[in-house]
Structure formats: structure tokens, C-alpha cells
Image (cartoon, rainbow, N blue to C red):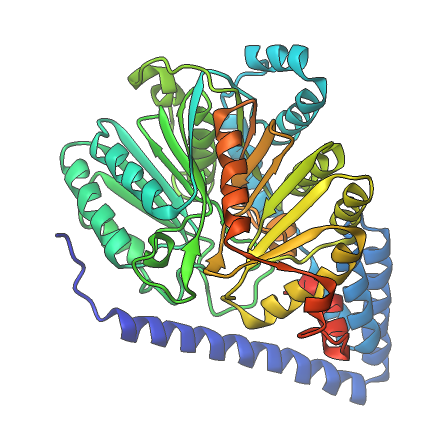
Amino acid sequence: MSSIKINWRRLIVNRILITAVALIVQAAWIVVSIFALAEYSQPMSILLRIISLVAVLFIIGKEDNSSYKIVWIILIMLLPFFGGILYIFAGNKKPSKHMNMQINNTKEKYLTLPEDSPAADELERRNKRVSGICSYVRSKSGYPVYSGTEVTYYPFGERMFEDMMKAIKKAEHFIFIEYFIIRPGVMWNSMLEVLVQKANEGVEIKIIYDDMGCVALLPPGYFKQLEKLSPNIKCMAFNPVVPFLSLVMNNRDHRKILVVDGHTGFNGGINLSDEYINVTSPYGTWKDTGVRLRGDAVINLTEMFMEMWHTFRDTDAKVDMEKYSPSLYGPEYHSDGFIQPFYDSPLDDETISANVYADIVNCAQDYVYIFTPYLILDDTMKNALCLAAKRGVDVRIVTPGIPDKKLIYRLTRANYKPLLKAGVRIYEYTPGFIHAKSFVSDDKIGVVGTINLDYRSLFLHFECGTLMYGSSAVESLKKDHITTMDQSREITLDNIRDYYHGTMFDALLRVIAPLL
């Protein structure tokens, strides 16, 4: 088996310490300097207050999530000297203009998805409501809906990983891998061994991992180590963590994508780490979900990957996207409903994921079932869920029974009460931690992907999901929700009195939730 012999642990610890100390020193220097200037210079004190006032006015006039705006206005009012500067460094969610320009240029150069899709016309004839949300996703993200795609749903990571490995072993032309977390262990090491074999056979392999997601798991420069294994392996660490304060450090690549030969793709919440296939059990049974797509819709996943790759890695390369077409290397797959892989970016003003979720809830007639590891809701989503329950829709949410982050778990539970009072049913997955992110409604429509019900996923990160209508996978997703709820503990208003007392701390958590 291929191995990279290096003292990873020491390098990882050193990197974390150096970065943390550098950031703390910079932040402390900025704070001390600002307060010193404000204290000893009357003009500077006035200027800082003006900056904070301008920041507040900018926030008020900005089209943004109301909860996010409120928390920043409060912080600036509490820290009039420092608040405006703090917002400039940490509060503006939009990445730099340079990053925005890079991705837009890449879209213009490489995006080859069709303007019109025959599947979209057929979907409009069958269901105008669903056609409407698919049309919205197409217009705002650029990714159309398809038929001609087979879908397999996975209720756990173990089974999905088996099929991922089978697909990789059959690869003949290219393999694209994009994950938030890659961690050495049984899962990644076994995959890497096969990847090296395929690379030596001439298969083109490209890998993207998020540097923040892997900062405590991989040594610095790990992408260079991977590239040394074969000339056919290329790798990129997305948005590298550096020991300098930066406006774009919050914008992470939280997507999970595997594409093989253009005709087979995988998407879901599963990262490349042992807990996702229950080799290790840090929080009991780890439940995650995903889908395998085979056929036309895989081109969306391919182009998502290539857009990211050619924005931040091979920026000047000339690429013939036709050679990555699903039909070039694979057979014609039968149609299993309408499938639309999509992605959401923090670069624009469209909160596509939040809007897709809200549309499913608002249009539900019989039921909507939700898996989410974190339940940190803004007013729009909370009101949509409560209203759906009040008008008779069976709204159910499954959250973890064993948390991975105790503070976020407490915040999740702090959001239960208004939902329960409105009639929403909430379950905690008692066997362990549920990392799945999915919606299913009315036996017709479902979403499986990477998008949590929290502020980071909905507003700060690069995310992706697969929207499905009329697919057998929707029924499989519903069955999995029912099975999971049977294994979970239903929470009632009486239950929450055992751990929620309406404390000031919980109220504070809800106020600062957009920053967590």
C-alpha cells in the first residue's frame, strides 16, 4: 500500500500552534492599537465611531439575513471603537472581489451546460410547482435538471463507500474527488491505494480537499505529497489556512463530490474519514446519507468540480469539456425521475440552498421529513416550519442523540421549543450522531447533499446537493426517515424542561447563532 512516511502529528501540531498564535497576536495588536489610538487621539476616536456608524448603516441597508444583521449591529453598538473594524475583517460574508472575479471568469470559459433541457420541458408538463423550483435553481446556479439518470440512495456510509470503491476500480479515463475532510485511515488509505494503481494505468486523477477541514488531520503541503505518488495525480488544498487575518477564511469548500468517467457520480454528507463508515465510533453509530447518480445528471457534478479546479488550480489551462461528457464513456441509463445536482456559493446574493429547503416546506401538503446534524434556524426557516405544521402538514425533524459539538448541540436544543409548540415533531437519534442532511416531502420530492440547517452551510460555505423528483430514491429516502425515527427518541415539551430552562446563556446562544 502506498504510504507517505512523514512525521504528520508533529507537523500538524506545529502548524496549528503557529497559525493560532499568529492570529491571536494580530488580533490582539489590532485591538490594543485601536483602543490606544481612541484613548490618546480625539480625532481617531471620532473616526472609529464614524466607521462603526457607517458599518451599522451599511448593515441595515444590506440585503442579508436579518438574524445575521442584528447580531452584528449589537456587537458594534457594544464596541463602538472596535466594532466597525471587526465587521470589516470578520462580518462581511462576501469573499474578496478577486475570488468572485476568478470564479465568474471560469464560468465564462468552461461552463458548457445546455441552456435548455428536454427534461425541464417534460417536468413542466408533469408538475409546474416542482418545475418552478428547478427552473429557479437553473437560472441562479447554471445547473439544469435531467432525466436519463439512475439513482441509488444510501442510508449509511458503509454501503456507499463499497460502491465508491467499485466505481473507482472500474475507472478508465478520469476520477474527480472533492471533499471537505480527508483523513488518513482505513477509508482514505484503501481509496488512495486504488487511486495510485489507476493513476499508474493512465487514469487522470484530480483531488480537492478543504484546508480548514483538514488542518488538524493532514500535514501542511499534503497535496504535494499526493502529487509525488504519480504524475497523473493532481491535488489542491482549497483556500489554504494561513497565519494572517483574511476576509475569505470563513468561506470553506464543504462539498462532497466523486465523479468517475463522467457517467457515475456520488454526492451526500459523507467525508473521507473512518467515522463516516463506522470503522471508528467517536459518537456512537455515525449515520450519514448519500446518492449515486449514473447518467446524464452527472455532468452537473463534473462541471461543479471543474469550475472549482480551474478557478484555483489550473487557471490558464485549455479544457475540452466534451471529453468529460457522461455519454462518452458510459452506456445509456434508464430514467429514474428528474434529477438536478446543484451547488450554492457564498459569492452571490442568492441563498439557493435555503430557498430550495424553504420551497419544499412551503409547498408540502402531506408531510416533510428532515435529517440535520445542526438545527440553527433563521426566522424565515423557523416560520416556514411552524406554519407548515399549523396548516396540518406532518413536519418531523431528526437531530443527533449524541453530539459532536456540545455548544452547538445546546443551541440545537434551544431551538426546539417554538417548533414543538407549533406542532413540529422532533426526534433525537439515540444510537449516535446523525450527520445526514436531507429533506423529503409528499412521496415526490427530496434533497440529499452537504447542506446543514445552520448559518455556515446556508450563507458562508460552498455547498452542493441533489434535488430529486419522481425518483425511486425519494421513496427510499422516506423509508429511511421512518426507520430512523423508529430508532430515535421523540422529544416533547415535557422532555425539554429536563435540559432547557430558558437561561440567559441559551438566549445569548440564539442571538450569536449566526456567528457559530
